[in-house]
Amino acid sequence: MAHFAKINNENQVLTVLVMDNNIILDSDNKEDESIGQQYLQTHNNWPANQWIQTSYNTNKNTHSSGDNSKAFRGNYASIGYVWDATNNIFWRPKPYPSWVKNTTTASWDSPIGDAPTLTEEQTSQNEAESHEWIYIWNEDTTAWDLTNTAT
Image (cartoon, rainbow, N blue to C red):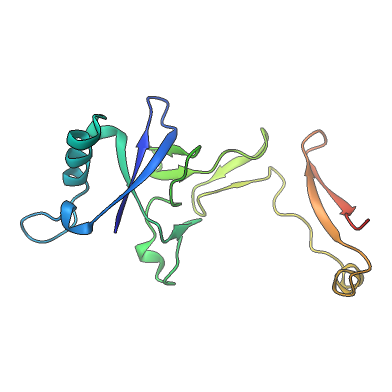
């Protein structure tokens, strides 16, 4: 199945439609995004250039088959995502104002990197269910805070 994201003038994804792959095949039996765009314009009364093909099997620039050469447009588009034509990526909503785009992984990164790794003791306590240690991003301090979420 072929999937197309309908975007508005601000490049926000409004919806994603699914169509039979046969609809977007050219005369050489190869997928052609422009054929799908024209079809969607005709049948949905929305400009062809605001229909962008997306891959259901792509997440964070990784393809579900394990063959990342098949990864397409960073992420499968969903309502609320934003189309970035410059980087050819559908972006999830930005989680925090300070976070930055990582075009390699098609994801948002904190300005200081990943959360620290839990200590062996914290991991053991989590496994024993006596604690629930996790790191939570603190936008006010732009740092990872260690929190015990167990009640």
